[in-house]
Image 1 (cartoon, rainbow, N blue to C red):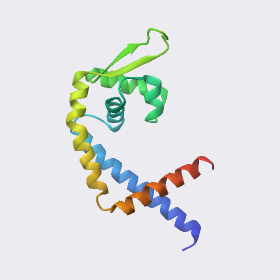
Image 2: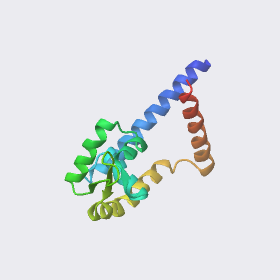
Image 3: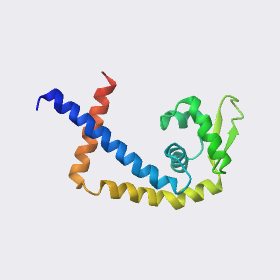
Amino acid sequence: MREDNRNLKAFTVLFRAYQTIQEATRRDLLQYDLNQTEFSVLEFLYHRGEQPIQVIGKRILIASSSITYVIDKLEQKGYVYRFACAKDRRVTYIFLTDEGRALLEEIFPKHEQKINEIFEVLDPEELETMILSLKKIGFNAINK
């Protein structure tokens, strides 16, 4: 197989694997009435504590126009609340509510187990090689 065909095949395999993993995690989160973006916001706040809304959007790769919608939905569900920064009115902090924290304490271990089950087909050396290879490809893609 020509190298350019192998690259295309690698891209296709990577893309399909990503879609399949994303679908498996999407189904897992639906049982909690969360989509993947909502879960990502909750998980980020769970592990990092209160954050400015702009930081959340950048860290979980959501457009600034979309992050407000996601936060609105999470606020309606009672999982987060907003607090305006006293020093800079342009900054709004997002906090997990007690209900949001309790939800993550319940579902994060189960979600982590689901991810572990997906990757259990790889031995530790294969997993490390995959991580390094994907990082290398990602860094290379930034420069292209």
